[in-house]
Image 1 (cartoon, protein in one colour):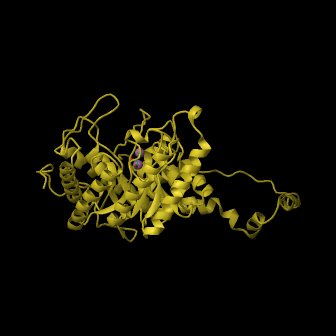
Image 2 (image 1 turned 180 degrees about the vertical axis):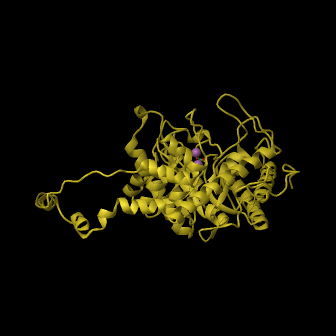
Length: 434
Ligand code: XLS
Ligand code: NI
Ligand code: NI
């Protein structure tokens, strides 16, 4: 048991009029939106690493949080941490969580000890999941923090690191399957380079492609039903990360024949780092058939860093969910808060309030997106804008060739007149819903 959250009651939906800071004002899990419960649309998950493993450090200073499970070098305290984590999932009514191996168990002396500890703690999780009903959205391996990964995991010049990475992913996939995880994520924080002067890019890409194929082969071998997801990010911690953005990842998957096997976990802040909007990344993945899941955490737009803050911008979140709903909504994916507190936010109450706020903002965004979908205004405009392509003549042109098209331009004296893109009118339309 844990008393970390003592004095904090289960969070309830009290509606927009409530002034209680520890209540939901917009997220009512049982509210029906487009024929589906809000909880089943959003599929919220807590990120174990930020909420329970991160100690409040930044590049200029160390630990600010003093938790009952610190220091995190002992299996007993790993269990105290798990007690607190599952207590928080219960308080918030969080349906899912996500974890890396390194978040949940202390680093062992070698691979064997790491795996034994992972198995022990995930057995402990299994019991807690049964008691609380919390499910695992995804598991993953942390192959970027320990010094062995400094030059990459599957892209490391040292084949022994590739081997350690393969064995580590195997143990994490086994643990994820044991816990009924609905996805398995690979984020390649160090799968990239610091400088091209010392990097054989072609060899590294080939190794990364083969590694991912092995992950897919292993998934089929053990009958894992979850989705395999790659998480794009352009940089940080590497100067350049190979899984730069959704389009780059798709090209990579296609080259290695994995585009039907692997989907994407898209993160809002990573989209911004890559110079895109979040909805751009979602629409790209949806168009290419690889939309899997999302990490809903924003950056500080002034600092330019991946600051992993809880979402607080309803219009931004609404456009993201609009594209998710348009693509049919989540199936096995969900909304993971890959988000951390600010380092001055020391209290248990801060941790709860951060999630409550994030869930409320996402609920408002999703409801606005659903209202736009149901109203159909944007779809009508799209249909109108592309209506010309519904004619038999236009469709036939796509099966034709440059010579025949030219003949038609001359014969029919085709001389197109531009039409308004109506951007401001559409922006005003969206403003009615957010
Ligand atoms: C880091 C990534 C990471 C992944 C999981 O920027 O977002 O947290 O989601 O390894
Ligand atoms: Ni991130
Ligand atoms: Ni992430």
